[in-house]
Image 1 (cartoon, rainbow, N blue to C red):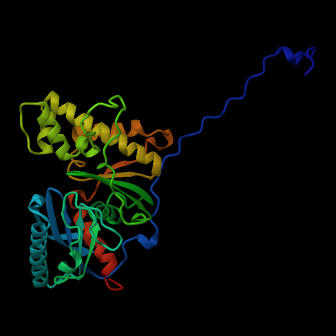
Image 2 (image 1 turned 135 degrees about the vertical axis):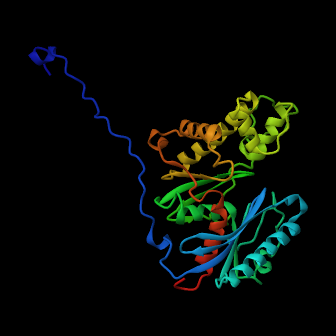
Length: 349
């Protein structure tokens, strides 16, 4: 424009972008092929073998109602055969009771806190020493069976019957004796190339590099910091008191114990940082949290939620729903039975 033009002396406003609302994730209908089918009643035994306890029951479908719930200590230090013997005794007892009621189980599912490959073989022995065991074959006298990783079983229960039912995708995180996760897509837990999904907290955390060339203790894992046994061990190292369970640490924190508060908060912050990273990586519509420690509420839950949101990089993700598992501590049992129902029930069941 010519400098003599009268418009040249008038400052022109710089156009400002119109603020756009941050899109929020909304529940999306799950694909029909992954929805629980409308069917005649079917009964399956479900077993959830965790590091601390083993839960079992007969689950009726399509309602996912548990009958004859049993809970016993797992005590994995006794060895894999002893744990399996206890599981099979529970299965036999439940099968007899269900048959006496006129509802014999048509299948069974076993969820275990180990890596389980696509064939149903247990291929790790971090807690339950079942690697190489023929679990399905040992179960078959009661009913045909499937074996599944416990975190995928629990994620399936939440997808079909629980907090994840309204979402096309969600990240399921379980926090208890261990910490693991499962991405659910279209109502089905993602199995990966080998079936070995779920490990998120068992590998050592990176060193800072400040101790290069010096003897350093082994770096901790996320489970060392944030799992139930991790909270107990850290609290016992920092105080003259001795506790046995994570609930004891959280109760002490609620009563104002400074060391318990420090341990609970720092563990929950570390967990939130990991989940926040996964949200940014996977972009789920929601996060569903289960497991005994994950469902405790209070200081641990509140700190975890705040840390997760703080560690989500994109503001578009930051307010996604973070929900407690609707099926609670029975999600693993229900999901193990549901895996058997979906895979082994006859057409129309």
